[in-house]
Amino acid sequence: MAQQQIELKRGLNGVYFDTTESSDVMPEGRLIYRGYDIHDLASKSTFEEVVYLMMHGALPTRWQLADFDAALKAARKLPPEVIDIIVKVKGAHPMDVLRTAISALSAFDGETETMGKDANIRKGIRLTAQTASIVAAHHRIRQGKPMLEPDPSLSHAGNFLYMLLGEKPDKDTAELMDRDFIVHLDHSSNASSFAARVTASTLADLHGCVVSGIATLKGPLHGGAAEGVMKMALEIGDVSNVESYLAKKHANRERIMGFGHRVYKAEDPRARHLRDGSALLAQKKGQPKWFQILSKVEEQMRPYAQRGICVNVDFWAGSVYYLLGIPEDLFIPIFAVARVPGYVVQVIEQQGRNVLIRPLVQYVGPHDQQYVPIDQRG
Ligand code: CMC
Figure 1: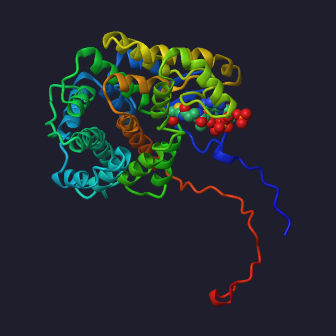
Figure 2: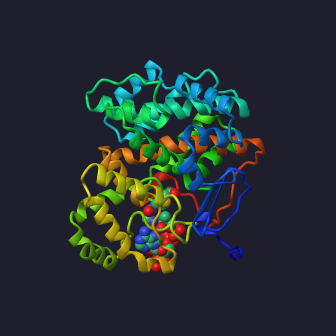
C-alpha cells in the first residue's frame, strides 16, 4: 500500500495545540505570567502572590492574599498514612517518592473526585503546600532525622527550607528560594505541563494530572538538567579544567547541560535571577569556586549562542541549591515544588474549555502479517 504523504512534526516541534492565558515564552528571551514580566514578578512579588495571580488570573488585594496564604499554611501537614508510605519507599529517588506520595494523597483528599474550577483551586492550594512538605519530610526520614512541624511564621519558601534543612533561613536565603520558585512556576507548553494537560483532557482528576506532570518532569531533558550541571561542575573541579573538559564533550558530540531550549533562542530570562543568587551565595558562603567554574563554562559556550543555544534556567539553579547544602537528587523535586501550581493552572485552563488531546501518529510498520500459532513458530 502506498504511504500517505504526511508532514510529520516530530516532538510536536512548532505545533500550536491550543491557546492559553497563563504564560508566554518568547524566543527572544522573554517570559510573562498573565501579562506580567517575569523580572517584575521575581524582583517585586512573592511566590504566594504569584500562585494567586496564576490560579485566579489577577493580582490579589491584601485581604485576598492573606486568606490565600492562610489556606496554603493550613495545608502544610501531611496525612499520617502518607507519611507511612513515604517511610516505606524512602530508598527510592526523591522524585519517585514525590510521585507516589502525591498519588497517595488522592485517597485522603475529600474532594478528589470533585471537578470544576473552585474545587481545583482548593485542591491546588493543598497540593502546592503538600508537595513542599513531602519533599522535606522524605529528606528528613531518609536521613533518620525527625520531621519538623511547619512554622506558620515562615513564607512558603522559608518554611520549605526550614522543614528540609532544619534551620530557619535568613531573609536573603528565603527570598532567593522564593525567587527560584517564582521563575519555575509556569512555562507555557513545557513537556510536564503538557503531560498534565493530556491527562486533564480525559477529564481525569487533578491528583492524576499532577502525577503525570511530576513523572514527566523527572527526565534529564526537562527537570533533570540542573542535577546534570552540578555534576559537570563537580567533574570539572577547578576553573583551569573548563576548556579541556568542554573540548572533550564537544569532541564526543555530547550536550552540555543547562544550555539550549526548544523555544528560547536567546538567554532564558529565568537564568539571570539564579545567576545573581549563585553569586550572592558564593560570596556569603565564602565558596566562589562553583560560580567561577560555571561562569567560565558560560563564557566558553558563547559561540553556541549564534545557533540559538544559550544558557537556560537549569544552568545556575544547581549551584544555588548546592550552596544551600541541598543534595543533588533533590534538585528536580525542588523544581516540582515550584511547578505543581503551574500544573494546577494549566489543568484548570484545559478543563475550562476542554477538548480531548489525541493526536495522530503515522504507522510505518508492516501490513498483512499472517498470524502463526506459538507451537508452529521456529
Ligand atoms: N549542548 C550542545 N548542543 C546542543 C545542546 C546543548 N545543551 N542543546 C541542543 N544542542 C544542539 C543539538 O545537538 C542539535 O545539534 P545538531 O542540529 O547539530 O544535531 C541542535 O542543537 C538542536 O537540538 P535539538 O535537540 O533538536 O533541540 P531541542 O529543541 O529538541 O532541544 C533541549 C531542547 C532543551 C532538549 C536541548 O537543548 C538539550 O538537550 N539541552 C540540554 C538539557 C537541558 O539543559 N535541559 C533543560 C531545558 S530548560 C528547563 C526546562 O524548561 O525544562
